[in-house]
Image 1 (cartoon, rainbow, N blue to C red):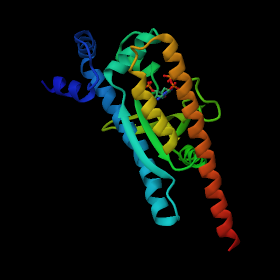
Image 2 (image 1 turned 45 degrees about the vertical axis):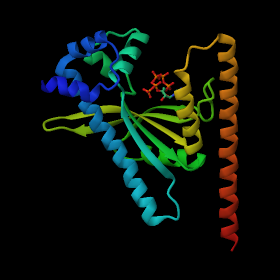
Image 3 (image 1 turned 90 degrees about the vertical axis):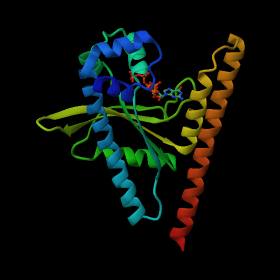
Image 4 (image 1 turned 90 degrees about the horizontal axis):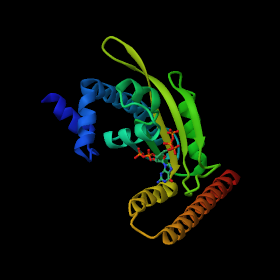
Length: 230
Ligand code: 0O2
């Protein structure tokens, strides 16, 4: 009964009976692994919250607009394990996936993204394992964000475990684009030529968003320079 309750807690995205069976077969070990990821996610979220508190108290602006967290749904875990051709076992999930725990930090300006990434990377207990800069090199879809895979220790009752968390840093504008594009991606029942045209339009929207981000940064810098001259 308790296991059933926990599966529901971690399984809002379960879609078919066979997926429910696959996750149920992993049993308590799956729930345990997800609880470790939740703990690691909480650690990283707290680190950004601490920075946010410091920015509010000490500086004239806070570069952190919002912090969001999510644990990958079992549906998404199963889909990815099948896509990359890995067996669906708890050990293999932990070994193969770096994005089960995700923390998304929405920033005000593009330069804030890199400053915050550096602040996180400099912390003693954080190891940056991988950086994917989709701002310097956007994805074909137009997607822009900075992705870090970090590893941090979590302290359990009788052990210390190192867990990986994916941190996505992006501006409000990049987040606006990614959220809407993500919603639109599910509307798949359209003809191929029209889909290609829509994809082109979404890339154009992403480029416009990037241009706005650059202009907003430039405006902020002009204001800062003017203030410094006073
Ligand atoms: P969800 O719902 O967030 O779980 P990897 O094995 O991790 O190196 P992968 O999975 O290709 O390879 O990672 P990638 O492309 O670096 O990052 C995947 C995540 O970035 C996605 O998570 C999205 O959150 C985001 N993302 C990447 N490309 C796009 C895009 O074109 N549009 C939008 N809206 N988001 C994107 P998941 O796993 O897809 O989903």
